[in-house]
Image (cartoon, rainbow, N blue to C red; front, side, top):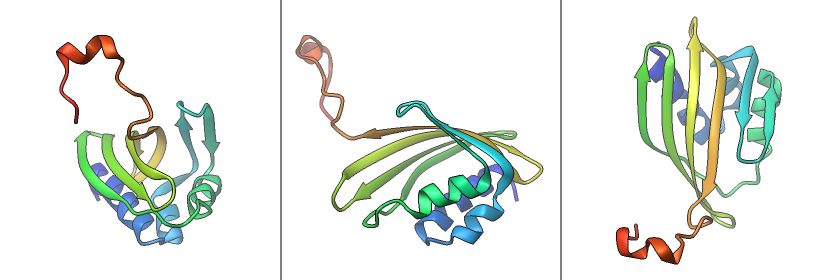
Length: 125
């Protein structure tokens, strides 16, 4: 599989709650950082477990996947029935058919309101 296909498969398998399948795409010693919350997840088992144990009520919609060799960037939307809509920009490194590292920026839509001083220069989305 091409690196971009591996990342698309990651999101597809998460959506399907195919946790064994998610694990197949990750190096055993994968490291994934979540800078917004100041966390680092070390190891395949920890990454799979933290996602499998996330409270139900969510779905995943892949907005885009862009690749340059083994570097893959994905943007996804994750609506949750109780917690609102999140967007995540993820930067993945794929080597020898496995995700070996990632950095994910999770943000809740509307959680960083636009300051009034920019109102004359922007359009609301």
